[in-house]
Amino acid sequence: MADKIPTICSNRVSDRAKKTLDIVAKFVQEECIPADAVFDAQTGAGDARWEGHPQIIEELKLKAQSLGLWNMFLPKGHYKESPGYTTLEYGLMAEWMGRSRTASEACNCAAPDTGNMEVLAKYGNDAQKAQWLRPLMEGKVRSAFLMTEPQVASSDARNIELNITREGNEYVLNGQKWWSSGAGDPRCAIYIVMGKTDGNNKDPYRQQSVVLVPAGTPGITVNRMLNVYGFDDAPHGHGHVSFVNVRVPVSSMVLGEGRGFEIIQGRLGPGRIHHAMRTIGAAERALDWMLMRINDPQKTPFGKKLREHGVIMEWVARSRIEIDASRMLVLNAAITMDEQGPKAALSQIAEAKVMVPSMALTVIDRAVQAFGGAGVSQDTPLAYMWANVRTLRLADGPDEVHLAQMGRNENKRGEAVTKQIQWQKAKSEQLLKERNLTQVQPGTRIQHRINKAGSKL
Image 1 (cartoon, rainbow, N blue to C red):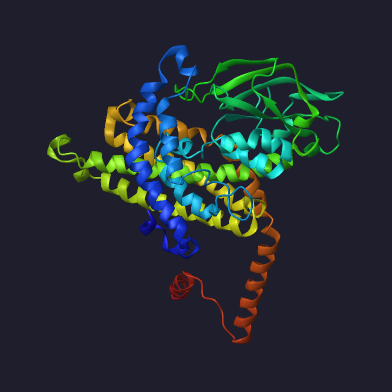
Image 2 (cartoon, rainbow, N blue to C red; image 1 turned 120 degrees about the vertical axis):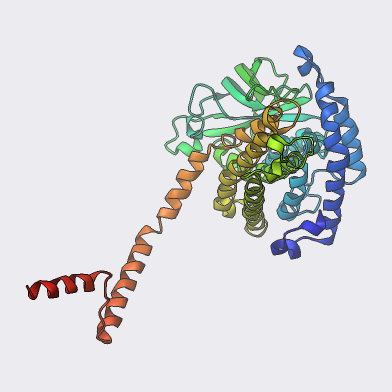
C-alpha cells in the first residue's frame, strides 16, 4: 500500500498513483484473491476447460473498471493511450496484482495482452490500432504471442524459421509455433506472429518480420495445449500451433519487412520487467503463507511450534532480505525505463529478469517445505505459484542468454580495470621508494630468527 512504498523512490510516486495503489491493494486482497477459487471451479473439467472462460473474470472486470483500475501498464510519456502512470508506479501496483491469479486480467493488465498492446500502440498504424488495439484495450478480446518454435533453438531468435512469403497483396505463412500463450482462450482474436521474410539478407537481424494474424484464419491448426509442470493454465493455455498456407493481407505487416527484431526487443523489455514486478508480489504472498503456517498452534512437531525450530526463523529473515533486495533491482529498472526509455534500461531489465524469479522460487520453496505435503498439493497456492514462476526462467529468453550477454558487457571493462590496477600498483611502489620504505611480508622475521640461530651452532 502507499504507506509501504520504499523510501528510496517515494518522492517519484504521485499522489494520484498512491491513491490508486491503495485501491489496487484493497481490490486484490478483498476481491481477487477470494475469487481465485471461484475461477478454478468455473473453469470446469476436460474439454470444457477450453470452451469458455470463468464468469467471475467478467464480474471482476466490471468492478475494476468502476474503481478506475484499467490498463495501468502503458507508461506515462511513452504512449498517448497511457492512463498516466509511470513504469515505477505501475510496478508497485503490479506487485499486488501478482499475488492473485485473477487480478491482472481483471484490470486488463495480463500477459500476453499487455505486450501485444504495447506492440500495437508503439508500432501499429492507425488501421491496425482501430482493428485490434481498441478492442484489446477495452477488454473485449484477448490475444496470443507466437515466437518460439519446437524444431529450433528459439533462445537464439535468429533461428526462427516460420516462413512468410509475399504473393501479390497477401502474405502466406507456413510453419509451426509452440508456447503460444493465450492461444487456448476462446476470446483470443488475434495472433502476433514472428517469422522469416528474407532468409537471404546478409544481416541476420533483418530477416525476421512480425505480422498480425486473426485467430480464425483458414490453415491454422491448434494441435494441443502444453502443460506446465502438470498445470494446463486453462482457458489461457500455451498452444502448439501449425500454419499451412495461411493467408493474410499485406496490411497485416507491422512496421515493415525486416523490422521483427526491432519490434520484439521493444516488446520483450517491458514484458520482462512486468513479469518481475508481479513475481515480487508472488514471493510476498508465499512469505505470508509461510508465516501463517509456522504460527499455526495446531502444528507442533516434537512439541514445539514450527517457528521455534532451528532454521525456520532464518528462512523468514532471508526471505525478507531477498524480496526487498530484488524489489530494489526492479524499481531501479523501472526508474531507468521512465527516465531513459526501455532500450537504455536493457542491462537493468536483464538483471531483474534473472534475479527475481530465482529469488521467488527460493522463497516459495521454503514455504512449501514449511507446509510439508500440503505445500505440494492443491490445498495451498504454492505449487501453482512455483510452476508459474519457474517458467519465467525460460520465458522471454532463458537466464543463460541474459547472463552471457551481461557477462560479455561487464567483461568489456577488463582492459581498462587492468590498466587502472597496474597503475595503482606502480604508484604504490613509487610512494614507498620516495619515503625509503619497504613492505614487510609476514613470516620474514621467522626466517631471520632461524638464520641467526644457525649461525651460533
